[in-house]
Amino acid sequence: MHAPLKSLETVVPADASARNAPIGAVRAFLTLLVIAHHAVLTYHPYAPAPKAFAAPPILWTAFPVVDLQRFGGFGLLTLVNDLFFMSLMFLVSGLFVAESLKAKGPGGFLKGRALRLGVPFVFGVGLLAPMAYYPAWLQSGGAPSLAAYAQAWIRLPFWPSGPAWFLWVLLVFAAVAAALDRLFPKFVPALGRWTQDAARRPGRAFLVLLAASALAYVPLNMALPFGHWTTVGPFLVQTGRIGHYLVYFLTGLAFGAAGVGQGLTDPQGALARRWWAWQILPVPAVVAAVAVFVVAFSPHPPPKPVVDVAGGLAFVLACASLSFAVLAVFLRFVRETGPIGRSLQANAYGMYLTHYVFTAWLSWLLLPQAWGGLAKGLAVFGGAAALSWLTTMALRRMPLLGRIL
Image (cartoon, rainbow, N blue to C red):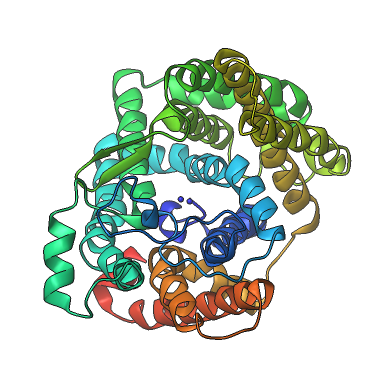
């Protein structure tokens, strides 16, 4: 699901910390949204009842634990999250790419990304995902036996990777950026010159992003079943959104080519100054997206092409407007971060990698408690955030992991 990840940013000079502070805060905020999203899915009002471990569709990959105690508000929270937070992760991940390409060259850039993304992907897929999904095995009626779990796991038609799917997709996008820079050395600087004007005219940048994402998303949305994922071994991706995510990553690359803290991300620019105006558009956009979703799953939905086009356009509008709204708020109000904020930003990558183990196991441990879905969801979120934070702080003390995390 991302990134708002410390490992995705290149090293910047100390005097650049002030201009990067809003982006670091966005990255940390998105990390917390990811943890919250996974914490409350257990208590989602429409979470599916547990089934046999290998019975299709294998929905426990999204709902590792399902609790009969629900909270309706979590349905809206996860729906709004899904409209934008992964896309904004890709955009933020692209912001520092231009600086890194300039400093290291395409080869050095890609080598660094292979270490910072590839190694954690293997670690996440090989160890963390099986740990996180063991409660799903138990809730499906599996025997409390690691050997039986391992045998059932390897017989699955794919290898569930959990949140680590984001890392391999981001690594592929990094390879695309490196190839563009190698083949067209003047392309990225030209992007920076074009996006420099976004400090004065963020609306134009918004419309370009909206049009590009619509072209990338709507046709695929029409051609594919709802919510389709491509699964090849541990390589998973939401098929209809792959082009949309690439657009957001390349948009981040374009904005970052103007310089982080300049162009669209200028804390003194028009996006930050008129932050309040950018909070208005997401309201009707989200309402439209929710309305299409409700109508699509009503007893008598409109024809599929109508739903696909309307839903696709509502999604790209809600995604872009929510992303710009979040950026506007953080650019306007974040000037510096205190010790807690700095720690959160420094440990965000590890928190993203490890939190899924904690959200799944805490949800499992709380199943017997009669606290209600809201209280349980908040407890799992707080516990998973704290435990993944502390775990990452400990892991970063190890020399190799410290370099990666």
